[in-house]
Length: 415
Ligand code: CAO
Image (cartoon, rainbow, N blue to C red; front, side, top):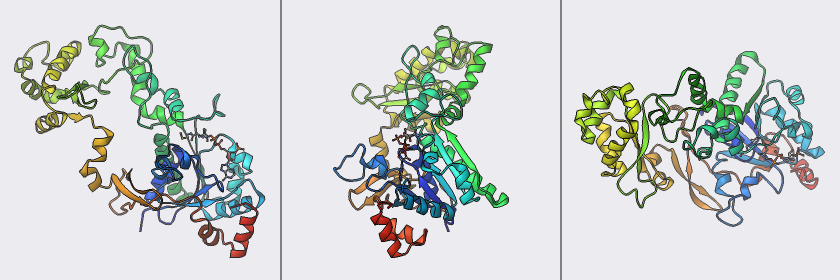
């Protein structure tokens, strides 16, 4: 039995943030019923298509292991069906623009009345406050949550990261809130409202940058490269390029082939505990005893010199050779892997982190599997549903409609 096998989820999510949350719960065994507008569906089905008239990778990669029911929840008949679905499900998840479900006639109070055990989970761009009514997409959240102002090169423009910390990151936060509420319901017998704002989710992931904001009041941030370069700090946590976030200085350094390969780089961390190994590897054994280099505080003003010397060495090796040489010496390094390299990495396929999925319309495609492994609840990634693929079975088995009632609902345009 899968961990969440007896949990039914009414999935009103769309685009990326909400679907990542419900996909995760589906992977853990929940029965996720994705509700989509008849004839329209989740907008991402048609966005960034690589094959004409076939569900996009954007959609398929975010909606595995779900069932799809079409329902016009603004029609009278649709509202009746939705009410029954709310009665039958354990969790309802949505990430519509603020107020959309209220306008549909299903505010939290009504949902609670219909089913007091219902856990009602929402993602919005912002929490209560001046921006609560705003529609929000990934990059807006990255900017408003502090990620963009702290990402990029010193003196350059703020940068958004390719990691979808606003959408997928908040989806993860919401999933955590949902399973917590399910656990609480075991004891209280009642559902509750779970909310995650994208700004809050991003800020949570930028926690260490708020740490640095407060440290700044007590002096310069000595592990930031700009300290060693004599560049004064301003009032806010600055952009730190590729500096390591913690107290162990690190940078991205060129490797053999960097002139033609945009990803021929390694991350290299000068962890204090293995400093002597680093000196030996790069051919600077004299730095082990040199008072300018022997201790972490002594090195901080000389980081450019330190990383310059390390880079002279890394440029003579490929990023994989750097890894092979440094790992046995406990020196923390990591190759900069391109998406192509990741897609071709056999070890990720063996663990199920990368999976080949078959789709009736697009054929086989590559996807990211479940990154969380449960020993007693292994994940089998199943393809995303076609629009309305499970409408009839859900109307029959979950809502309890007869064949005749289903035909009537179809004729009325409700499903
Ligand atoms: N039946 C009938 N109506 C339906 C329906 C259904 N099954 N499903 C959706 N609708 C309606 C909604 O009720 C809404 O109608 P109203 O505007 O009349 O209330 C309408 O469809 C559109 O919903 P929306 O406003 O959420 O969609 P949008 O494309 O305009 O906005 C987005 C998209 C993402 C900006 C917005 O949903 C949002 O801000 N969500 C919260 C934050 C979030 O999750 N952002 C991340 C998205 S991933 O990058």
